[in-house]
Image: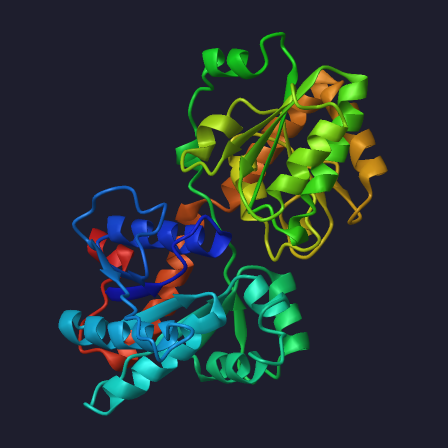
Length: 388
């Protein structure tokens, strides 16, 4: 199949998922065309089946805001026509679904039918999409999609509650490439971070208000009162200055390390003992799943889709949003009990295997093939047929 993937190229969950999906599809022999304004951060390998098409937005004095959506739709049309795409798969509704609808209508005028699938990831529905400025277009674009998927049951239900959606939303969970995290931890790296055998806690996010990162610092402060510990902060974002200020106020500057955005996050996770995710809402929690793939238990809020992956008392612990006291107790209890910690690390890894890329990608292939059979003359060859 020839698949166009439209996504944000950043470290956010939607961009990471879209890029990893495209790489996996390319490995299986499909032609994958990424269409976005810069090369995705996870698109860091060469594959003859992967193509990247940059969306260029001309700047004119007439426009206070460059018309990215129009430039994106035009680029989609060029890629569809020049590379004979079978379908478009757009990740994150705004503005990708509306641009895909525009592109599909343009190529339809020349006698082509190009289906597009929209995958909903979270804040495109729960935050941005609810804004009255965008809601009518978001609702229309989702309903005009040939298929709609959501990354968790929670997000599916939130979408139905927030928008008048007239089509079925299929749940295809986020995934992780467990093999990528199946490496031996680098002991020397751990000793640099925790030279005296301290426990290592870790957090990764875009440091936005919805992530409640100050709660991470407060949990760590309470944990450190009970046992020797270090905290690694992965990522960056608008709340970082305030977070760093809180670290200084609590006298934790020697024990908290900000490591910025990291492409090779697995190296850090593999030497960690506990992952903290204190978000006000997570449609799924891809960062938590990546931690589990590295055998790291997760201490998280019970918001959104997190209970669908983090099983309380088995793979980690859940607590109410803002409940720093209980989260701190859970962290201290777990990190003080080596047998319990070892058990939860294994449970976390086993849970990640359920969401391994090899279990999830076939669901997307099956979805694609429904439309390729209807709308393309190309014969779709299934994995089973290919092996016969």
